[in-house]
Structures are given as structure tokens and as C-alpha cells.
Image (tube, rainbow, N blue to C red; front, top):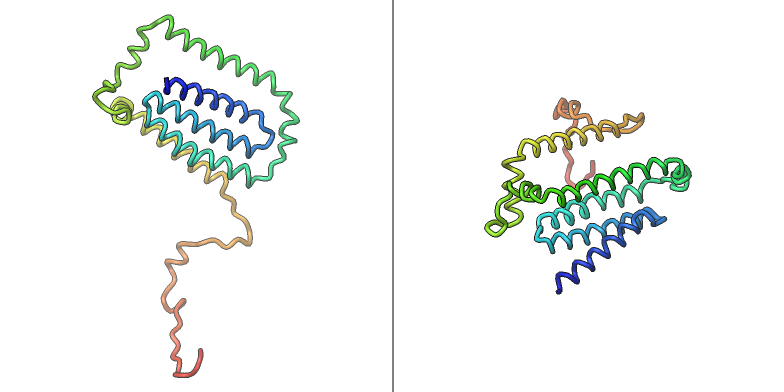
Length: 203
């Protein structure tokens, strides 16, 4: 009974926060509602026994991604009124994409109903959750059957990080930057001056 009440509370708050994310006028408020939604989703994962996914939601998405969004929105001077002016022009395209996603979700849910054996086939690689914990089961599956895909995802993220650094790097005139080669080539005589100071006198 308590789990059922907690599920409906978390689910209702998650849906409400998701609606507020897209309907709030202030983008900072939207990010705060997004953080609230992540916490509610983490609570649902805990109820399902997926404590690892819940901790990932809290640590990675709330602690890093959502906070990064919040700082970016607060620091960038963006005129959101100008951005919203052309929203009606792309509304048909957005509605079409939404219908496609809705059809895909209906196809996935219909597949579980039409082919009940697909659920057993999808859960076959996992170990029995009664013998191992949820985190250990995910680790075994991720680092055995999908280890190459996991490493490929890491490479893609590394390339994306390097690309973001290269795109945002700007060489501006008048800005003093560190030159490692010049620093390493300097000699002691060029940077250190030894002076003999008599007692009671200054330099």
C-alpha cells in the first residue's frame, strides 16, 4: 500500500514538473523544474529496485547536466522573446516529430502485447536479480556483452569534448596566454636576481 501511494505521488509530481518545464516562461524556472523531475524519476527507479539508475539520475543528471544548464542559462544573455517569435513557423514540423515519436512508442508497447516472448528474450542476458544486486547485474552485462559498444561510446564522448573545445577556442589579440615552450626554455639567470642586502638597509 505504501509503495503504491509513493508510486502515484512520484508519478504525479514527475508529470507536473515535466509540464512546467515546457510551460514556464522563465528558463531558470524550467531548469529547476527539470531538476525536480529528475528527482521524481529517481524515486520511481528506487521503487522498481533499480537503485543504480536512481543514483545515476541524481549524481550525473542533477549534479552535472542540470546544474550546467542552469549556469549556462543564467550567464548567457539570450533574448528569449526573439527566439519565441519564430516558434509558430516550426510548429507543424514539431507536431509531425511528436506524432512520429508517439507512433514509435505505440509500436514498442504493442510489440510487448503481441509478442509476450520478446520480454523473456530481452531479459535473458541478465543474471537473476535474486542472486546478485542490481548494480552487479548491470555491470556484468555492460562489461561483458556490450564492452565494445561501451568503449565506443567513450570514444564518441571524447571526440565531442575535443570538438567543443576546438569550436569555442578563440585567439584574441591583447590576451596574455601561457606559452609552455617559452617557460621551459627560460634559464635561471634570466628570471632570478640575487642581491646582497646589508643589515638595516632595503633593496
